[in-house]
Amino acid sequence: MRVVTEDGETLGVMDTRDAIQEARTRGIDLVEIAPNAKPPVCKLIDYGKFLYEQKKKAHDAKKKQVTVEVKEIKFRPGTDDHDFDYRTERARLWLAGGDKVRATIAFRGREMTHRELGSKILKKLTVDLADLADVEVFPKMEGYQMFTIFVPKKSKVPVEKKAAEAPADKKAEKAEKPAAEKKTVKKAPAKAEPKDDDEIF
Image (cartoon, rainbow, N blue to C red; front, side):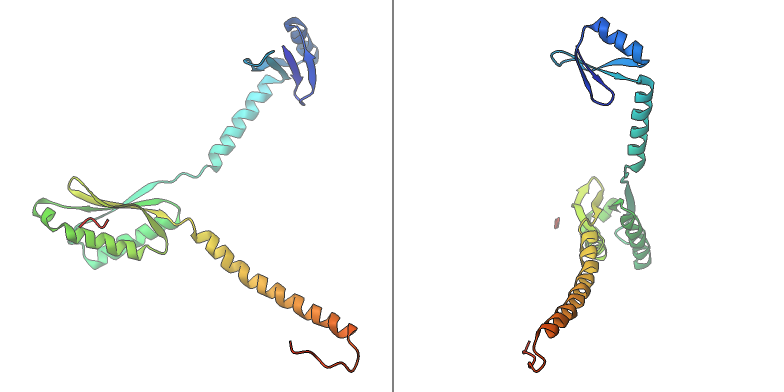
């Protein structure tokens, strides 16, 4: 087997007994890390410490992981403006927090013959959320429900960042311009004159 140290130093190809003896001498473990290699590769490490570090890395990665939830707002074909505005505001808060939003229109009985009312509500909602969200799933029917799904805009942050950088670039340009003009004045003669610068339905 090929033996390497914890620092990556290669000790070369060794007999299994010699490798185990080397590990005991160093007071650490001999761990096989590439069993399918020819010859197999083993590493001299503190196995307990190795497991602890792996567990810690996994925990830190899980902690940094962003979980996206799908929140839901429900409407009826006859939902009034006040309820519509309240639900829209909730959707805006969720989208601003990075979550997806599913908007559902629930129909009952004869309301199914007036599905255009549900379509109208979802169209209005799409317009009201256009500054924050993109449509991931366009309006469609599922049993007695019509629904659509919104996702937070991805391009919103880069656009704002570019807008913030633009004034800074202009300031830097203005700062450089006077400096360049001063140098020109120093080099020019004293008497020199300045140059002219779904749908479903």
